[in-house]
Image (cartoon, rainbow, N blue to C red):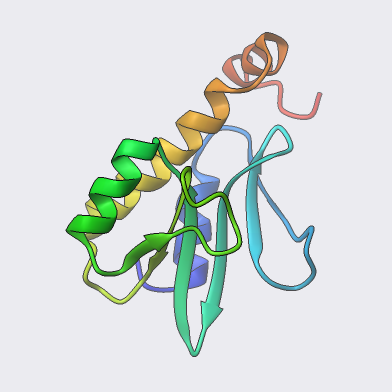
Length: 123
């Protein structure tokens, strides 16, 4: 995954994921039931993605990968921004996206989680 489009395609594979632009043309915000789980942008031609993360895991990922930094304009304890420069393996990046989605989905109300489980998006 190298491009903004590829990142968005992977995010949209998650149940109930939708694209939104609440801050203008940039960044692309991926949401589930109205809650953000990824913000995708491009700086100087290089894609980046901000993802929610457990605080301890966020710190570990920052130590492991130079491309992983505290969330840009986000709560730095709970969000990381990953520069898509090829140094983070695709499988690891996908796992980070999955974890972000799961963390946000778990925080939804019982009714919202049931709607997702039943596939009744936006019903």
